[in-house]
Image (cartoon, rainbow, N blue to C red; front, side, top):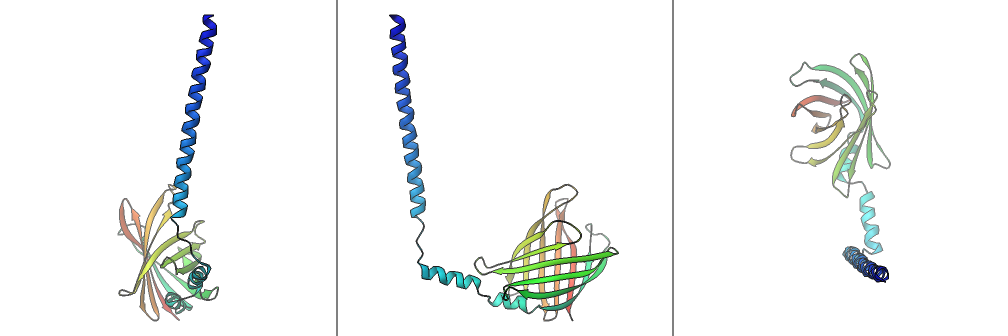
Amino acid sequence: MKKLILTIVLISLCFISCKKEVKTEVVTVKDTDSIKTEAVSAEEPVDSAAQAKAWQAYATPGNEHKLMADEAGTWNCDMTFWYEPNGKPEKANSTAVIKMILGGRYQESDYKGTIMGGPFEGKSTLAFNNASKEFTTTFIDNMGTGMMVAVGKYDEKSKTIEYKGEVVNPVNGKKAPYREVYTIVDAKTRKMEMFDVKNGSEYKSMEIVMTKK
């Protein structure tokens, strides 16, 4: 008899516990649903005409793209490298052929030259995002297998774009920040300076002075 009573009590306790768990789960689901509903309702609806206008503005080349188009042509590149802070500079030369692509929306550059006694080839793209108001530059070459990507904004007063990005050190596999300053010197001269970080300190690692033919 005692065993029967004990069994009934245990079953009752399990039933009560299960009901509590079910209630807790229901409340949790309701709370979650409520949060999701509030988050979705917070977004303001956009009519189709406004959407079309925004996309048209996003796709239409503007003044920044005109700035990029002014660089179309062939450029001689006088390159200087520093592999260590305050190290001995190494010189190299290359030629860059710049053109606009995809209806004047992007700039593409092809580089050919000689570095450290060997052939050098590189390709870069440049974009100005009408939505974010930022420039994005990419660069690849035959001296590695990675892509350099950096983002920056144009300063009208100094005629410069300061880019910031990251590179992977092939020796240790770690990412490191780098900075690039691109200066419009005059109609036929451009200067690009790159700054790397070594032992926690930034140093100038490359300078390219470009002269238009």
